[in-house]
Image (tube, rainbow, N blue to C red; front, side, top):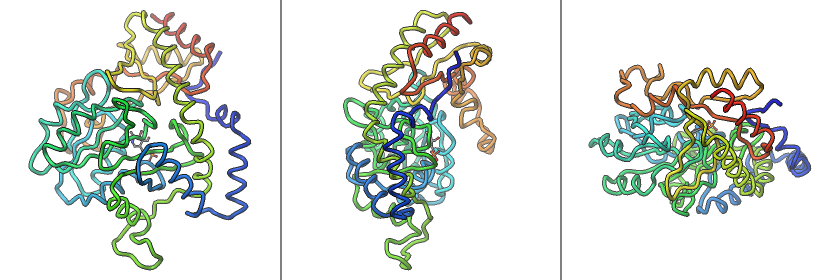
Length: 366
Ligand SMILES: Cc1ncc(COP(=O)(O)O)c(C=O)c1O
């Protein structure tokens, strides 16, 4: 049996009628840019995340840029983020005019280590971007306490963590703003690029909206130089059709993770994802560690199981950051994990048989 890493076609098949009707309605109304479908999704997503404002945009990368630009980063301002994420998180700090300062992860949850944040703060630090990586919330109590102590803003990168909760409270509601990606493979995915930034701060919401819309809310009146970052009507309608299913899909991912945990638990050398107390993990990715990761991935691939490495080179060690001259001892956890992590097939519709195939192959490898 072959097991795909994710199966977007299968998800579409389960809600085909709703998606087809949503697309047809947008085409019928020629509501391609902004308009009612975008507004409906923004309202619905804000309600689901439990925030006052949702500003949709073209993708999760733009969302990070828009949030930081609206927080008025100035040249030389330092922004602290995690060594373990997708490059959008750090690249947008630079594009918004800031200096990237990486911190190591905590060694067990793949999220930023609050102790490392404290050590990295300087008089130039203006903000922190924690990433709820793989779907597990970062240590938000500790991070928000540090931010309050040093008067820093916080932007939560929730690209992989739709509906994840920290001590019962939804991620995206802790920081000054939070960014989401609706890239097709995300827990809530569009059929193209899409993203959003959310906030409870009305003034920040207004500045972010202006920035995302060419620097003005009224046509031909540009108060600042903005960018063009829009969610299109088709993607908004598709996302609105999918949103009511997100909670059920999240539970299905969590159930699939429990099946993997039970099956892989006793297998030598396999390190399971560890979830810290008080955090609910939404398993955008189910990522294990193994000392012979590349051999294991090859073994699974040869037997029809797709896997991925998220990410093979931790951010500080990418060529894009060679100017900093980072050393592995500065980020021991991220450095150790980059050669051990392996993401297994994970999607809401994965079957027990598919999971058994994966588990049996890993056991056979051991
Ligand atoms: C943690 C993280 N941040 C930001 C992004 C950027 O999102 P997008 O691909 O929608 O630009 C992603 C998506 O891959 C991500 O995983």
